[in-house]
Amino acid sequence: MLTAPARPDTGGDALQALGRGAALSGLLAGAAGLATAEVLGRLLPGASSPVLAVGARVVGLTPASLRGPAISTVGTADKPLLLLGILLVCAGLAAWGGVLALRSPRRAEALVAVLSLVVLAAQLGQPHAGPAAVVVAAALLLVTVGVLRSLLRLAPGGAGQDRRAFLTRGVVVGLGVLGAGGVVRYLQQRADVSALRTAVGLPVPVRRAPGDLAAADLRVPGMPDVLTSNAVF
Image (cartoon, rainbow, N blue to C red):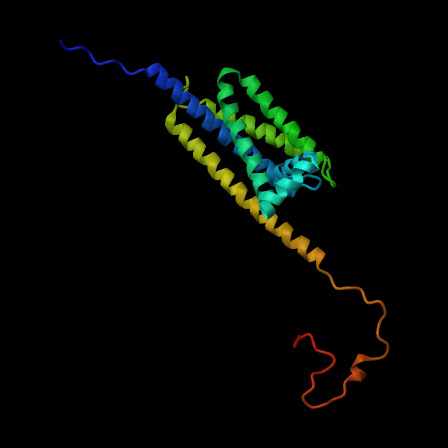
């Protein structure tokens, strides 16, 4: 006896697609908000990098009994591992926030607000913190929430799903994040060079040698001049 093939669980498939789309929306929104905050944190006087500020705060709150053995174990990789851990935590929270927004958009936005306050508190703990730290935290909040809302409207499996528009908007956001990452890297390299120039300086002489240095030239054939002209130098 022939039986009809079982129907695919379209409801379950739709829920899975919606969950994946929401998680991806959360990741992209979190990346966009953090990238914007990183750029502003390096451009505005009185602000700082959110990731670096949170990392410094984590190090400051870690007991010395735990910090010492950890540094001894990983050596010079302690800072990269710390920053990587912060980024992974941010990615996990962003994906979870995207899924949470399906059930309760206000709770998801409250989560972003709490994280923005954490970033603000970490920045205000930096030595040269100023009012611009508020701008960085506000940008993190507004960009993340705005991008999340924009993507969730088009997420696959949702009421207003539009796969092509969702992918197009997601690619645009991703390219924007990559561009912001390039700007952050450029600004970091420029800051490193400026710091090196500031650190390297000529020592101030204790006393100036008396007399005319030009008169000390012995005019011996083959011996270089005491004073070197700018053109030759």
